[in-house]
Length: 72
Image (cartoon, rainbow, N blue to C red; front, side, top):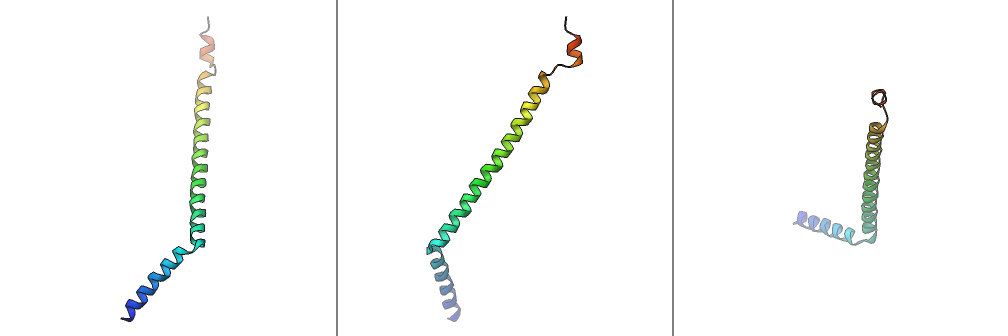
């Protein structure tokens, strides 16, 4: 009987915690940090890929000695 009372009290405490506005404010900050952090990581990775792609394109466009010798 005593253990049932303790279990029900802990459930009530958890429900009361969820009802507090500070709990939801902290959850919003966690969500915001996740979204912003993920966006920054994705933007950084996209930038790196764009730089690599541009380097590959510019490497193909640069004249080599063999290309210069084949000019007629």
